[in-house]
Image (cartoon, rainbow, N blue to C red; front, side, top):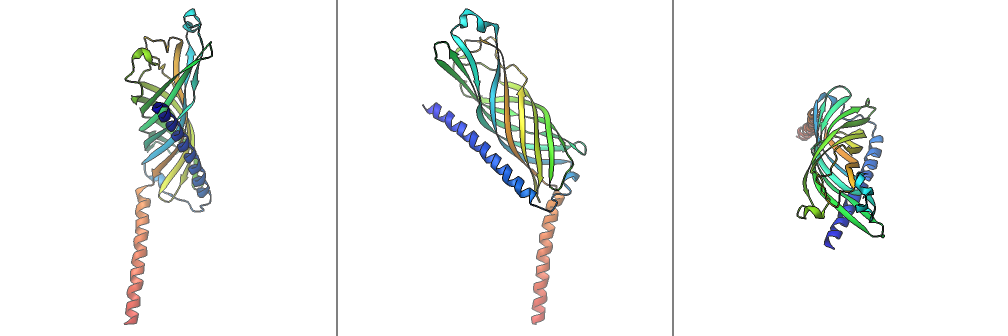
Length: 276
């Protein structure tokens, strides 16, 4: 019962994060549209920027049946059905300028995943095999962006995403009692987003699709994967990213504050002299 409640809370948390991300994207985009001044006009002068990302995703397995699925040994299995489950990710951003409209991004990320397979039997019963895992990911992406229009710029990203499982539920179970999968993967990532420039940072909502290239089934198999020839991963994520502006912009802001305080000090001294 505790395990079921934990899974339910995990799914609710992933959905809440996705909902908050969408609302935040809409509100910040609306605010950016109503801002008439151009922010971070010297943003491109700095060749490297740092930031962080937060996102929610929906992930599932993509399966291909093996020849053994049609043999008498599995005649009681009607089908094997992957499910869509939610999760979330946290990460850092290292963004480097390559050309005027091309950038290279490294995104060290921690992803929290849940995936499942439901084994449906001919007698109407079913068995659900759930796999959850914490993955360490390093997306290596190229970012191709449009010319900036005011405080907005569209972009697309594409590249590879290697990942390694850090921990997962079921490690203590016997091998023949669980679906055995490999602990590392490589995926192709493709996505689109919108850069929104603010006075001291850049905010970007992004949608990214990731398709796993590696067959994750372990060999030799057991009763859980004997009916499968191939199992890959796919997920669709919604992210928000924050990247810092160039140092010159931050220094300029501090200087303006300093000038304001100096001018007020001069005015106060002048008032004192007049009173004297």
